[in-house]
Amino acid sequence: MLAFVLGTKAELIKTAPLMKELEKRNYEYLFIHTGHHDLREMCEEFDVKMPDIILFQPPKTTSRFFLKTRKALSWGFSLGYKLLKTLKNIKNLELVLTHGDTITTGTTAVISSLGRWKVGHLEAGLRSYDWSEPFPEEFIRQVTDRFSHYLFAVSQKAVENLKRENVKGSIFLTGNTIVDSVYLSLKKGKRSKRRNHVVINVHRNENLQSKYRMKRIVEIIKLISLEIYWPIHDNTKYALKKYGLWEELKSLPNIEFSPLLSYFDFLQELKACRFILTDGGSIQEESLVLRKPCVILRRKTERVEGISTGINFLTKLNIEYSKKIIERLEGKFKIPKFENPYGKPGVSKRIGEIIEGLV
Image (cartoon, rainbow, N blue to C red; front, top):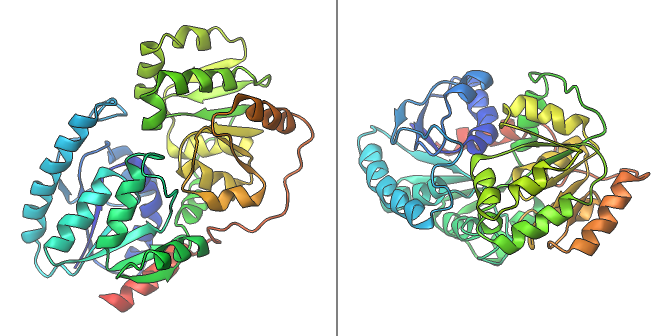
C-alpha cells in the first residue's frame, strides 16, 4: 500500500498528475490530507479522489497561520502525533510519498522514517543553501531529503546537490511534475480577457514579516507602467494593511486586485501576460513551462536552474536592478532559446514506473 500525505494546494497541484498516472496503472493508494488548505474544490477540478483521511479540518481562509510562527510550529507537533497514529492503523503500508517543502512535508518525512516506513520525496534536491532564504522551506527540504529513502530529483542540479550532501536515499532524476500539471491544467482554464499585462503574486513568509521588504516590493511594483493584475492572498493583504501600504497600492491607476483564482484560471493569466512579478517558488517553474519572463522578489531562490535560462531574474529586492529589468521587459524583450531544466511532459509517467519497481 502507498499513501500520499499532502496539505497545501501547491502540493496537490504537483501531485495530481502522479495520482492520475497511478490510477491509469490500477495502482491503489491512500490520500491523507493534513488540512493545511481546503483541497476539496481542487480535487474536483483535477478529477482526483477526495482525501481518504483528513487529519485536521482546513481553514476557511487562504492562510492557516497568518504569519504566526509559533502557531505553525505548534500545529506541526500536533500533526506529527496524529499522523503517526494514522499510519500505524494502515495495513500493509510500504511507501509514504510527500511533496515539496511545507510543514506537512517535513513532518511526514520524519514521522514516517521513525515509524520505519519507506519515504519518497517528490521534488527533491532544490536548494538555496541559506536557511533563512526561504525560511522555513530551505530547512524543511534539507531535513526531508535526509530522512527520505527515495528522492525524486527535479533537475540535474538537484541531483548534484543531493550527491554533495551524501544523502543516504536512492536518487532518481525524474524532472518536475509541475510540467505535467501545467499542460494538464491549460486545457481546463477560462481564457484570460487581459493581454499584455503583468501578473503579481506575493506571499513569502520572509517578505510578509518585514515592513522594510514589503516597502521595497511596493516601490518595485510602482515602476511598472503596464496594466497590473494581482489575485491577492489573505495574509498578503493583511501584511500590506499592517504596514500602511495597502492604500498606496490601491491608489495606483494601473492596478487591479482580485481574490485568488482557481489554478486553471490563474495559469491562463500567466499564459496571456507580458511578464510576472513574484516571490513564490512554483510560479518560477511555471514561468519556464510557459516561457514567460519572471521577476523574482527575493534575495535568494532555491530554483536556481531558472536563472540560467535568461527569463528568470533574481532582484535581491534591489530597486535599481529591478527598474532595469522591468524597462527591458516592457520594451522589445525577446525570449531566448532554452531547454526547461525541469524536463518535458511525462515526468509523472517516469515516477510511476519507478514506484512500480519499488513496491
